[in-house]
Image (tube, rainbow, N blue to C red; front, top):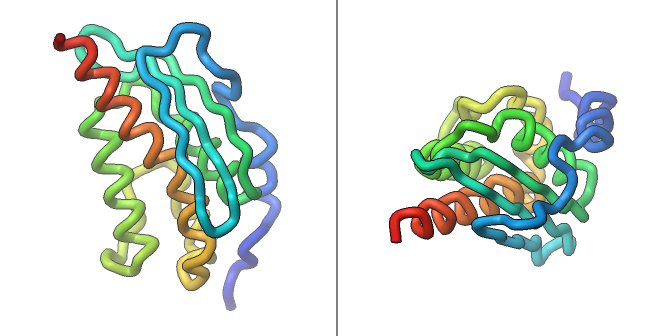
Length: 145
């Protein structure tokens, strides 16, 4: 038996995105867009002196899967380093592409298991992780200058 691609958990996550407001003074902002469906996620980040995410702002204009992914991302992003975010992005990308069996070590991300055979949905699932990894790296570089 296979789980439905869109289910109550996905829809609940899509409706409850944490940090769903742009930051007034981000150290870095990155927008990523899926060319397949047009979904967009903008991530604003402020990092602390150690380069870890201290503040997060999300603007999510995406399908339910992209919204749910941004919700899971936002719920666990505070305190992560740029390396943590890059590793999560890379693991998510590899898992969705079938290059690894286990889902990434990110709370709740296995909810996307039903999306594995639907490659057209993968870009929107990756958006928040891609934008955040880049924004965190950019913000961390700015603190070392």
